[in-house]
Image (cartoon, rainbow, N blue to C red; front, side, top):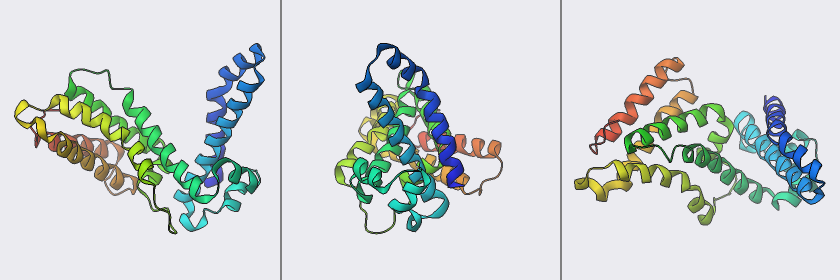
Length: 226
């Protein structure tokens, strides 16, 4: 399964950069062409690592196993990430960066309650579309790896986007509670999505209704009507 996920991700990454590569080739910019190739290779490696973690568990993710999955040498992994801890840290940041991008797309929406609703459903869409990356965000890495404090700070950018929307939607009497209100909505999202990922909540339609009800109930606790 991990090999299939890796293959699909490689194809998607190639398609995403095809037009850009053609433009680079027309300009004859060899340096930029190399950078594009590096970015695609890095994304492919991270996607393969996430797939191995999801399908085979933390113990299976060795540099040798990963190199085999992407048809590369272990030297490539070491050069790109500086070892397994560097790989895991990059994978953690890559996963949250994907979620941040998904939520940021709705930042322009007004009024704030509609922005909250759009961001929450984008969170669920991201988890369903990229289960391996979502697993990395909250899953166990194994061994003694601890996410660095700076990486956790950078990963909080996605949370802060939602917090910004929640703060704008709160009544003035509760303006000081933006942090707690956002945590409650985030917890509601995560709870339903995690149970859905384990096939514990029924059909996709049932899961969507439960998800919508859960985030609305969480928001109502702080007088926000979604």
